[in-house]
Amino acid sequence: MFPEIGNHEIDFDEFCDVMKRLNAKKRSWNEVVRECFTVFDRSESGAVSKKDFEFILREVGDITDNAIIDEIFDEVDVDGDGIIDYDEFTFMVRNYMTDDDIGT
Figure 1 (tube, one colour):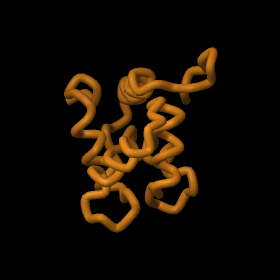
Figure 2 (tube, helix red, strand yellow):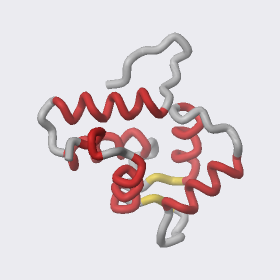
Figure 3 (cartoon, rainbow, N blue to C red):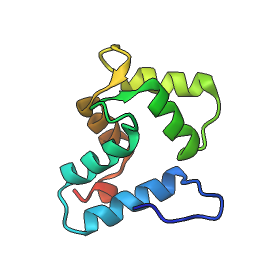
Figure 4 (tube, rainbow, N blue to C red):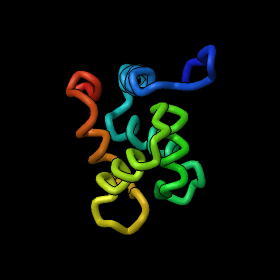
């Protein structure tokens, strides 16, 4: 799904490009978000743990500062239960992507 890159890492712009390409394949926005959610949900638990979130931000977002990762996680984990569920993930994607990115 993700293009192979010289350093084997994907930055946020590349992640958004993949989202656009998936959306261009006539998948619904919900299908695209669900597929991306499965990338974040590395443990396949149905929710994104802080460990999974941290891994993706470090690998895809190239964010290495623990304080920034904690701040982003706490902002996305709206109910404060220590995990990011699908609804919270969807809310995050809607807030961080433009209308052009999600095809609305």
